[in-house]
Length: 200
Image 1 (cartoon, rainbow, N blue to C red):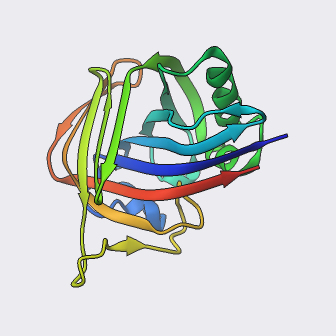
Image 2 (tube, rainbow, N blue to C red; image 1 turned 180 degrees about the vertical axis):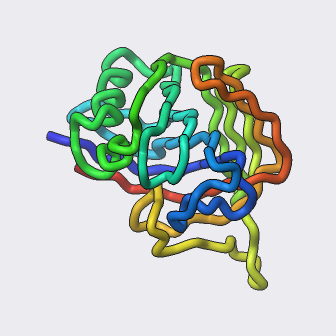
């Protein structure tokens, strides 16, 4: 048995728009303090249904994103049952293989794993994410002349492989985590939205 997870991504960091990590360049500040959220509109791990839940990874990336060595604080939706919690952790620890395990290879250290109240809302291209009092982000995609979101495709790095990423701007990004040494409160920096389908 394996997993099949589908849903929405919100990603925000302290780089300017557009984050150079997605095209394999070094982050604007030499390092990157960012957050990746996966919200499952539908999903199963073995026979455990995880639909409606969200996982958030707050990260400190020490240099080029492709070289790895990320330090991560992971937050699991506090509405998850113990079975859901353990099932999702097994996926994000890389124990189930597939695209999530590939992402996990970039992580050098998980400094903490905890349950937290997570609010994830995306509507009409606008996204809001909060994790307790530790994190808040609000973003909206850039749009082309037809009103459709501006997308990035075929980038060398993507946390949603195979899917277009909506190039966005965060009107606010506030994140604090003592274990990571992260304390940011920014306006007008990089954000990414998109849809994912992970299966293994």
